[in-house]
Image 1 (cartoon, rainbow, N blue to C red):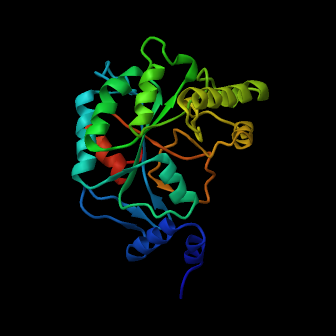
Image 2: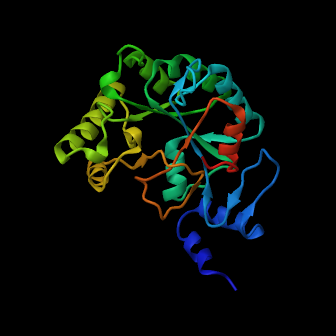
Length: 264
């Protein structure tokens, strides 16, 4: 007898159907080799990885991934046949009808730090990977941050530039006028300067409220990413509450996060 879960998955997307088929072979979770993804029943496996600085690590600062470790991480994805996809492709797979490739992974970078351009961007080009860079528009061109020319070059080479607000404020505590300014102005400036359409936001510090989501919808944003850890997704979850995995400067935790063997 076919379960009700089957009908629910069929109604979402093709990738949901594929996830369901995989989970039927492994009722709780499928566990292959240590470098293979763990699939969970009724969930779509597609880890979104979150980076900040890609630069020599400063003490125990969790926001730094050293350049040599970053290159090892990208090489590991390539060697083990993971498919780096764009955030747009992820969105269409989860909320549309696009079939995602096997072992999908999304690379995201917050703040617009200049070391992302100097140390991450060349490595990504080397492996043919794309990524989403959420930038703080008020910091563009400032000390330690990317310039408009750098962002234009990245767009030309297939990278996505999206919003991380104007001033990196706590959106959960902001009023309507301030929230609207932060979301609308950052979107408008990026679109005018780069000739792109901004569709996605990363919440600064992961903070947001119901008001934030309401304004995002009104302004035409399609999604927003949080800092809540999970490698698994469901189309039942709001596109304005998408989880990501914070990546550390080591290989053991990276493999655990990507495969689903580590949660936090």
